[in-house]
Structures are given as structure tokens and as C-alpha cells.
Image (cartoon, rainbow, N blue to C red; front, side, top):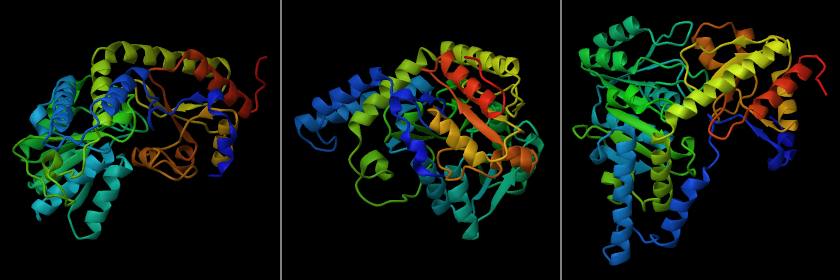
Length: 389
């Protein structure tokens, strides 16, 4: 994709890409700044300032664990959800040479890529199908796990492109019945779904701070205490030795504040986002913009996927939206593609032509109705219809 999309000043943009990253909530910056100004010492240092920084890290560990209903003793800090997933996948693979992996065709690149590498090394990696709505086929999953009892299922309870919500409790029950583990990519679920619907139903969980309105550069891997992972890096003993190196104390402090804020607002935010989405789709209809809803009714608030059958050149279409100051993506930010069919929609059985004309819309805490109406007006114009003054 050409770089002329960068020419629109940031102040004029309409941001509809919350799935890629969220704007930083200013309320998290107070915790970040305080850690930079007061708790700047190395948490591993044995002197008073180091101990103060260490105490802050442990306090934040408990706050985040409490916010998501996890045990603090199993929570490890790292740089991102992608790093957490990598550490979990490789840590399990290295410790158990016979462990098989099961995933789906709708997962994020941070899951697909390491599993693809494991497959190239001769490890067993199976793919569970999803139905036309993006829901995991429970019977197929049970069969795959039964045939490979020493296995782990890696998936996301809220899809990064369509927002499709999976039945985490049922999936966990199926895995438990087969003696399998569950590794959960909760990057999209954490900011959108009540923790009670997903957090209790995994053996390992990965979350990134920048999906929760905190600065980038911090993430977590939570694991059950009974699980042991081989180290994928060597160095110091920080974070159980799994993530060696000096902890990102300011990032951890902001992460904890973001989790605390989310804990008290997720229900109201979800309600607001669903109202905004409904108003936007109604406005598209009123403006006679042809579109197909690719997201099932059971999708997470704030992320939905539409396809537009009238688009002939997807790259030109996305560049024009960027020129108009509208920030939106087709796929996850980890994909360098703009054109071509969506892997997620393809796995759902959507035909290649239709899935080549899809767009993911991500909204969140700071989205206002006018943002979506601006996109609606742009779509009407690009579809060949005149816009109202």
C-alpha cells in the first residue's frame, strides 16, 4: 500500500481501527508518568528505590489479575500479547516433544505464524473448522482432541476481524474431557467481553495493554501454576525467568490503571458501542449503500465486518478513505496486505470475490456517532451516490 495515505494530518482523522490499537486514555498516563518520575529504579535492584519499584510491579500484578478474575501468582509481564503467545506456544512445544497443537483457520497471525513454523519442523498442528458464522465446530474439535489426547487448543474467544464470540465454557469443557489444554488469545476479548465469560476457561491467557487504552509495549501471559514452560530466551530471572530483562514499570503501571478503568465501564461501553453500530448500519441503509454484514449477531461490541460488492479496486478504495482522513483496516495490523480475500471469511466459507471486498470496523471508548456517519457519507460517495451537503 502506497504511503500517500500518511498525508492527512492526525487532527483531521476519523479513527475506526480500535482492533489494531486503541487511543491512550489520558487517565492511564498519570500512572505512567508517576512511575517514570518516582518509581524509575530497576525492580531487581536490592536498594530502597529498587524495592519501591518492585512493590509497584507486584501491586499492579494483583490489580490486573483481580480485574480479569485471574490468580496473581500466575501472571507474568512481557512486551505484548504476541510475545506472550509465542512464549506459551514455544515453551510448551519445547517441554513436551509429543504435544500436538490444534487451532482454527480464523486466528490472528500471532497464533498462525508460530504454529506454521512448528508444522514445518514436523510437529502435529491440526485445524478445527468453523461454521458459516465463524463459530468453532464443537464436534470437530472434540474429535481432533480425542485423536491427539496430549494436545493444546489455541484460539481467540472474540475474533479480531468479525468479532465472533466463541462459547469459551463449552470449548474448555470439551478440552478438559479430552485431557487437553487451552491457550487463549484474549487480545480482543479483554476490552470487549466480561471476564467471567472467558477468563475462567483457559489454562493460559495472553493480553496486550494497547488494546485496553494504555500505552504500547506491555502485555501479559497468565498460566496455571501447575504448568511449566521452557524458556524461549535466556537472560535474567525476571518474570519467572520466562521474560528476562528489566520490567517496563511505567507500562505496567498504566496497564493496571487501564484494567481498573475497564472493570467499571465495560458493560456501559458495550451498550454504547452496540447503539453506535446499529445507528451506522441504519444510516448506510438510508443512504442506499449496498453492503453485506459478515459478522454474526453474536459478535463482540466494537468490532464488526462488512463487505461491499460494488468495490472494484480494494487498494484504491482504502487509499481514498485514508485520503479523506478515515482510519480503518481490512485485516489485523499484523497483515501487510490490503487487497485479496480475507483469510477469516474464507475459513467461514465466504466466496473469494466477496471476501476480497470486506472491511473491518473497530470502534471504542472515544468513538462518537459523527465518526461513523463520516464513514457512511464517504461510502455513499465512493459507491457512486451523491452526498448530501
